[in-house]
Length: 277
Length: 335
Image (cartoon, rainbow over all chains, first blue to last red; front, side, top):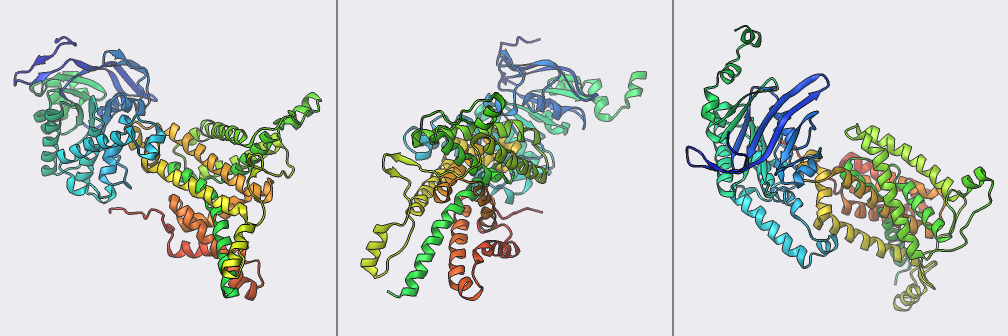
């Protein structure tokens, strides 16, 4: 077990930082149904952390707990060394945790650039009057925010569609714009909800490349959910595997791939049969 | 100068001024509809409530005095002071903000995600509730509204003699234009420019547009929906106050003031429910249209009184040929 406060270097030479977020014994219920059962894991600075599992395993619920959309009945969320009280989603965003959605939540009526600029909202600090009059500090702040947005647009190769209304874009590009907006917030943790869902092979490869590049270039800590195991194994530093709301594996992709419980879950061993053996 | 032409121009100008007041009411609707999808039937009553509160504070009336007197057997009606207009307006703004908070906290927070028709029904209920509260708080008699910045510098009444005289000398025809209408137009213009700058450039304005577009996405970029909704209701309350002052100064503060909401409906259909400039242009078109129609066609050929229905006719035509209004968002969807 590695020390929470220490960095370490992995076998392939990547430096992984100290723990930035820790989930302790999280249980989430909807009525009588337990979507998440007593799960604990942590996210370390600078790593790509994946949560995988078959459909209905509770992955999305887990992401929604982290981003404040769901409040768990039991367990604690620790963020940057202190226990996080129950918070609203917008407060989580203000604390530096940005996210994307499986079904894409973009501002359809706005251009790509305007969408990315909304990611900067939490960084706008100058007064309302000076913003209205576009003078002094407000102007400098706007220019700085705009620079960040443009840098990210360039980085994700969506310059050509900067001014296009998002509603006109195809699915794959929308996913990229959503990633750009989340990145514009310069988050401490970036949460990606099935970033590859519904994409063709080429789009998936593009998205994988962008996720790796973002992590490389900006050092962003990324936690992502995916049910496509192949993609995840190539991307991530550490993987949590969930099945039926329980954690059945946690470790490097190599560890997880050789874990019998994980293999069973993915190959679809019937659960009563499993109990019998 | 041709008498007939000059008179037409005068009618046109008066129509523009009336249109500004329609636009002012329509603006309140647009603000709330854009950010929350609620068609606020109570907007007209909010204007009434704001105007009554302003007069009440100015005159030093004791709020709920009838109720208090009935319960405690006392006989108090006034505090015995009068409040300066400027201070009274600020106090009224605070009352409207408190109202916005209360509406959000006690009504719409419990109705998030409901069908639009349910939200609409809630605003009808709100309208009657607010009308009752206004009555109970300040009494139902007709009140005159005089807003003065300083001694002798009040909202002007009557015709502008200077304009009439000057135009008579220059053009041989004196234009009759109401002083109050001129002031109202200037104030409305300032208000609109302010609102547009607010929506375009400020953090809160951008957050407002974000909420109008997608709730979930807005949450994920750190915008509090609750705060934005209170903000737009406050802004709508402020716009209602301005509209209430202008209409109240024109024809006194009375319960029929709440009916101006009905005049805003055709304006919205014309301008589009989601566009601030649309509300202005729509208001101006309706104002000018109904005055000119009455003057050129209505009075000579149709026996007059066309102003009552012209706006709705025009709106109906628009609904048939351009349902999203002049500036409304055209729904683009990839299939």
